[in-house]
Each structure stands twice: as C-alpha cells, then as structure tokens.
Length: 589
Ligand code: ADP
Ligand code: MG
Image (cartoon, rainbow, N blue to C red; front, side, top):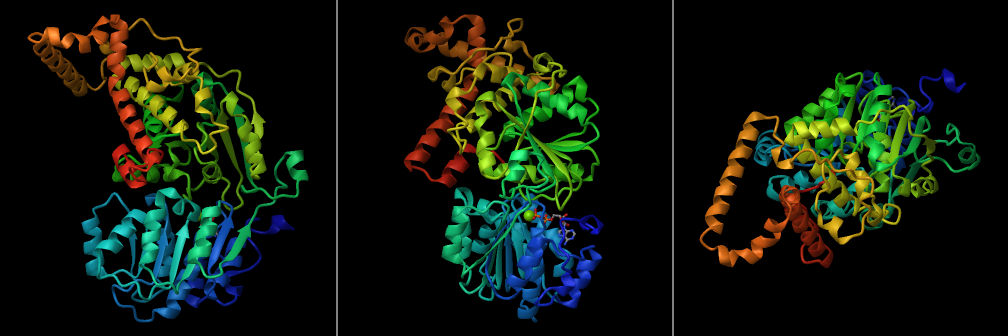
C-alpha cells in the first residue's frame, strides 16, 4: 500500500486539510512548487505554530523542516501585518551558515511574495555591511533571514529598524546556534526582541543547550519529535531494538577501519568505484580541504573527475560558485568542511564520505544527512583509525547504526604519487604540511576526547597518509611520545630546492631567500661574537636537518602562538570572540 503513494516520506495529510486552514495564496504557492502532501514534521508543526504555540522541533535531516517554519511564518504575518511600515520587522529566521541562510531565503520567496508590501532581506557575512544597510534604508525590510553575526551587526547599527511588532523568531539548526560559538550573538539578538513573540527551534539534533533556551526564552514550547523507523537498517541487532534511528530510513552508513597511511589510497579507490555518483567528502579543517583540493586532481586516477573544494575561509564569491557548480552537476565531488554539513539541500547527492570524523558527534548526523533526503536512498562511509573504533559503539548508543566495510584490497598506493606531486610543486608540499598540522591541532579539540585520544595518534603513519616528505618539527611531536613509526622520510631531495610550480611565486621566493641571506650576512658579520650563543643551535645542526627546521619554523611559530592563545582562552584571559579573531575565525568551517 505504501508503495502506491508518491513518496514514503510524506503523510496522507494534504496541506489543504490542515487545521487551522492555510490561506488560498499559500496553498497555490505550495501547489506551484509541487507540494501537495505534508511530511510528518510539517503536519505536526504548521498547525502548532499557526495556533500561537512555541515549538522545539527535532526531526531527521531531509524531512522538510524548512517549509514547516516558512509556511506558518508567512501565515502569521498575513494575519498580523496588513499594512506594514517599511522598517517594521515582523519575522526573523536565523541559521548558522551563509549558504543555508541563502537557501532558506530562496525557498521562502514564493511564499513571502503572497504577502502584499512585505519585503524580505538576506543578511549574511561576506558582503559589505554598508551595502546591506543602504538597501534596508532604501527598500525597507519586514522579514530578516540571515546568519547571527551579520544580523546582530545590522540590528546593532540600525536604529531605523523597529522590532516592537516582531511576531515570530525561527532558529534553524538551533542546537548549533545555541552552542558556545554563537550563544553570545543569539542572546544579544533575542535581548532586542519583544518577549511576547512566537519562537520555533528546528534541528535534527536538539541538545541540552536547546532545552535550556526552551526554558528561558520560549513560552511552554511544544516538543515535536519525528523519527524514522529503524526497520530498513539491514542489521538484525538494530532491527530487533524497538528504538528508532536518528538518521533517515533510506540511509545506509558504513565505517572503514583504516590505518592513517592507507586513507588516501582507500579514498581514491572509493571515488573511482563511484565515478558516476555525486559525492561529498568531509575533512577536518579548511587547510585539509585546501590541500586535498590541490593534490587529488593531480593524481592520475582522478584526472577526469570534477573535484570542487568548499570551506569558510574561501572568498564569498568563490564559495557561492563552488556550491552552485556542485549543485548543478549530476556527478562530481565536493570536498568540504562542516561549513556544508548542516541544512544544505543539494539535489541528487548519492554518497557521503567522512575522511575525518567530525569534532562534534552531532555533526555526524548532519553530514550524512546531505544524502537520503525526503525518502530517497543514500549511502555514507566514515573512515576510522583503528584506535577510534569505539566510536561505532558510541554512535550505536546514540541511535546511529553503522555497518562494517572492509578496506579494499585492490586499492593502489597513491602516497608515492602524492609525494612526487609535492616534490614538483612547493605549494603541494606546504599545503600538505599545513593540513597535517591543522589536523593534529583540531584532533586535540575532539569533543569525544576519550575516543579520539590525540596522544595516541600515530604521527608517523599519519604523516605518510598526508604524503609529507619529512616529519615537521611541531612542538607536539617533541613534547609527546607520539609514535613516529611507519614514516619513511624522503632523503633524495633538499626541501629548500623544491620550487613552486607557479613561476611568479617561485621568483618571489628566490628573491626572499636571497634577501634573507644578505640580511643575515650583514647582521652576523659585525657582531659575530655576541650573536654566537643564539645562532649556534641552528648553525651547528646538519644541513639537511637545518633545512627541515627552517622549513617548519613558520608553522611552528604560528602553532605556538595559537597554543598560547588557546591556553589564555582556557584560563579566561581572553574570550571566545577574541580567540576566534586572533586565530582566524572558525578553522573548522
Ligand atoms: P530538512 O530541513 O528537514 O533537512 P528540507 O526542508 O531541506 O529538510 O527539505 C528537504 C527536501 O524535501 C527539499 O528538497 C524540499 O523541497 C522537499 N520537501 C519538503 N517538503 C515537501 C513536501 N511536503 N512534499 C514534497 N517535497 C517536500
Ligand atoms: Mg533544514
């Protein structure tokens, strides 16, 4: 019987049958967008919000939460703002990333258009805030959709905006918005809003923090929880359990237990065997995405692949372009950080690969949720190091069942090819080093540090897996007894001799080297006797080692600097904002 129905992710309740009834104009807009039947979360949530209830909604990824708040927001505004003044704000929708805010803005447009004289505005970072302000001043803004930082900035700067008649506030990906990273901004935004308003919190992973806010800011919120049945999971142990899965029913998740030095070869093998698929590969940090985005396309096996990097340190225009081109592809690979983990509704994604598990275990659910959306099937694979295997049990307890998948035996070893790419282009070598350092630094901040124990990282194998030519001399490597086993340094080349493939960059490097040399000569000659004690440790070393040291000095300085900041943060000498500013905001996104 189910199979007769258009989509098993839909209920049999039509939007036109909801109570209180939706307006004709919204029903028309729904029909035009091809939406006739409600998803479970829509059937449950729309009537609640429309009848003056606050809601905290927890429903799987891809279950249709966006319309579950867009439709009621529009209906509430239809009733309450018949003749809006240009700068009277009635509704606000906040989400954690620019891409997601933009997506929500576009999904909402056909519905907002049914409201006469109501103007909505997308407010996200990466564009000039003055331009936003000018636009608001000239055109007015009754619904604000955006990221916390920019929204707060605008609310703070623009007295012209009037929030006294605000009807509804929506936090999409609420748990993320209410965690440490955003809490301050969200609280400041809320403090500028009237207390008597409706609030809706939406996510696939509600947490205690959300519960706290529910207690604080929401008036008797109704909890809506919609879960997928676990029956589709082909795991007898799991299907016997009566608990429902936190991930969509059509999603199969596998884990590969794989030594660090084998990871790139296994990844390339997976990509090659899924040549016709549309895939997303998640990495730990922006630097990792930069590196693999540079090196993977240089591997002969991936020559004809579309590999698109996306992370939050890219320029806004490049971010938009990356997402737009991946969206339009029928097959291709997005290489990204968690900036693309939550909320994005990219059509036709078949498979999610987590090259590195996320720092925050909740993000796991969001990452894999980019596939198997709205009743479709999907597949996800997560790489785990042998020592991380207890993560499987950890997730199982959290109702995220994983199946084992073994390493492919016929994967050819790509490490030599990566290393040869590094020898041919200094950019590859440097980005590899940076990625490696950033990975270790991020690993130290794993939320489940009892599963992901950085002191047990096998640095040697890890460095092999990054295709590094030499082990860098990070302070961590000196201070801790991390295993360097498995690393075979490349001895047949002086790192200093490795040139940038980019001619002008190489020219610049040569000039810098020359200038440094001259400066050093000038400096050391006249005051040689005084200088010796300081200069000695470096000059006494063997030349190869010296070069290596020189190579990593910059990384090391940067790392030590950040480590000092981190300690200050822990001590409370600086706060989160300052820390983020000083270290470069949101390394992981
Ligand atoms: P979530 O926020 O729960 O992850 P989205 O709101 O992004 O999910 O919706 C997932 C997909 O489902 C979108 O492509 C959306 O267009 C589609 N969708 C949502 N509601 C319906 C519906 N009632 N009928 C058909 N498709 C729907
Ligand atoms: Mg969503």
